[in-house]
Image (cartoon, rainbow, N blue to C red; front, side):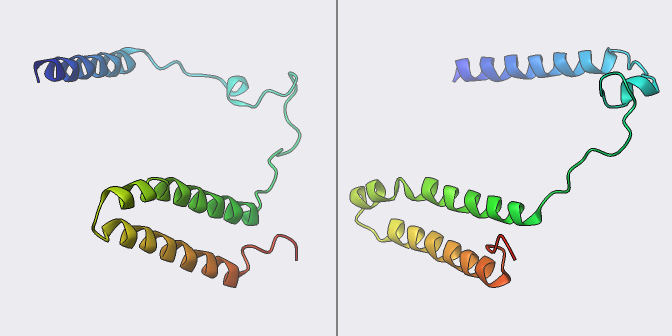
Length: 116
């Protein structure tokens, strides 16, 4: 317990030192040249941003959902093996049901259709 308190106090002291140093460092003002994007020394002629595809965003969110599903369901067989209750089974079933409903909603809205 004593070691935990010492560690917490040292981490808090380090965080406070970083905060004090960041406040005391003077903010240097920059000119327009330093704020502009670097493009071989020339000023940029146009906005070079590419429009973001919202369909790609939908697919990425879908991937993250199912990736998290795998991470949440990985310890399920071990928990079911060690427990005689039905709690792990109900938790896994609820995760699968929620993700199935979200998949059906994305399918119905057409988010999974990449090309029109």
